Length: 220
Image (cartoon, rainbow, N blue to C red; front, side, top):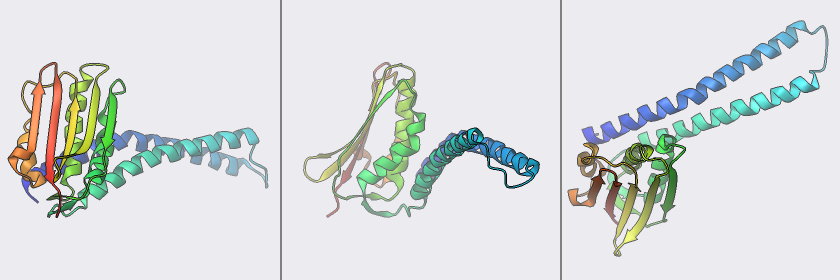
């Protein structure tokens, strides 16, 4: 694996690891209380005493809560595993699947006050390095989230569309605070994705937001 995909993978993995820490901590804390409560009931019971109905309802709610938190963490880790397990060799890309994975991996970075619009067209298979597009989308979405966060009420748009007849375009854009210059990450994307430098377009302006466009040739 070249340095560019490694950097993308490392940054996304760190972000996801930080994101799942809190839900996993809450699951552990909740399960510890449940185990303690059940242990006290069992040790204090002198026979086949029914579990109090009110306590049973609380137990049910707590177990459901723990399950939901665990599901959030597991889904993020499963998505990350799916991306990291890709061989990253040049071949055919399922653009829609990779973009949706990228959004899922970085959606936690979008501020509550930011609207996220995802318009992902089901396009034909394209040519590029497998597994890298999802990482690139996750990183670009994180950049747009940082830009949008500085302007409450901003919107981030992720779109997949066909341009001309033989190309697919992935766009990640926002109308937030923008940057003074394109982030260093952008210079590495063409190599990481296995496309020509002209197929990675970045426009950033202070107080205007960011527009990132990635172009892929459709597979024969």
